[in-house]
Length: 561
Image 1 (tube, one colour):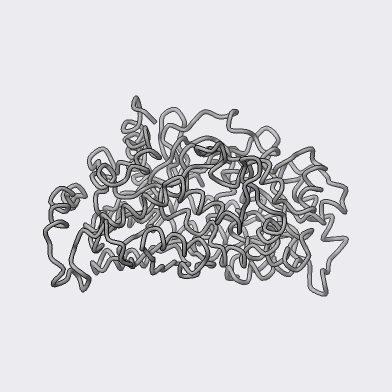
Image 2 (cartoon, rainbow, N blue to C red):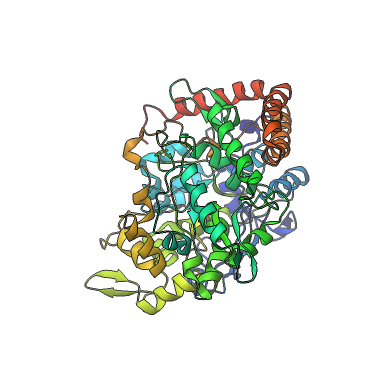
């Protein structure tokens, strides 16, 4: 059944909200009633496909204020493995949480009839959301055929300006310092640094030094193994695809000849003894444990992937064993596209399901979080406790900043700052509120204040104030008219999903095989993988995705964005 047929019409639903009594139940829950003006407490079940290790059941400082202001508490469930299985089970069983953040799994829930169209709810009850999204409302629509709004985009903020880099190729500060801050521009430079230091220091604190390790458990293989292949070869992040910038043709990015050479480099690193032999068999916890030990010299990852381990290093007074961020590429002619501007990106976000007992109260909850008061609360915390006002500007006291920098996990769990940013729409870094203060704490002065002394020393040595200074800026690239392909709901029809899963299984089997092979076997295995992908139907899948990209460009073009 098409998603447009499964869509829940809000007009009849809102009428039902107003006339249904409190007796009886829907799916074992209280009947639908309009309690939007009621001060009584209300709890919603919330599911996110992303982990939230510091979630404290809204018993943190920020959570308590949110509940006091809205009456709402969330019974949060956070997946640690990507949520695909959990979402599939929901879609098959019809047992949905009240609120869901399904990321790339949205289409499964739409096809199952699980998601409410938020269009009328936003129009009638959410002035702050309307103000936030403004001219971007058109980008919230699900597709050309089904123009319902099923989620509020949360993973990308409105009018976001990126002031810092958290990805790229990382090297411990102590390594760079001892080697005199050598150039780190190409894969060869990166390799030279790891080799030189590991040969000089084969043991770290009584354990073998690890020049480079990767985290390939589950979906994490994309972040540390396969995504770096396009970033290191001059392509932007569009998930599993490379999108031709002029024709919008999509193909699996592994088919780019340049990327084969990136994986050949990983194979070389393995055969040279510079890549951890356990990279493709270790669990994420083992990966982070090695980093926390201080013996891993280099990482190729996003900082959120190892933040817990890096925070342990800082808490233990070993900030010099934390990591830098460099835009390393295969050759100097290539440019890292991490900061290519996708424009405002919709697709991943938070939505209300048909199981929700009070959609009006829920959208008002989202609307409070999107208000100026809610945004400042979520990003800065509580005035007098987490920040002060000095000469009209919000300022984080030194003692609080120390906790944020050196005891980040504990601080977040207790304060709640940053825990709620993916629970409603939000303003991006660089956007100012009505008091001429930034909504978020991520602006150059505050970012620099949050660096450790080891970071500041490394940045100064490379003539930079922030890590972003080392990367090609967004001005060097055109804005992508399709946004970010990975943020687009994939087709939910069985044939596409079957082919996609087959290709993923092939990639996640053959890439490790190729990397761990002898140099003589690398070409045979990698070329064989491309053949297997095509035999599994990759070319048909790519054509289908090409049409999706072209449809999105058509949906967005010549309209305010």
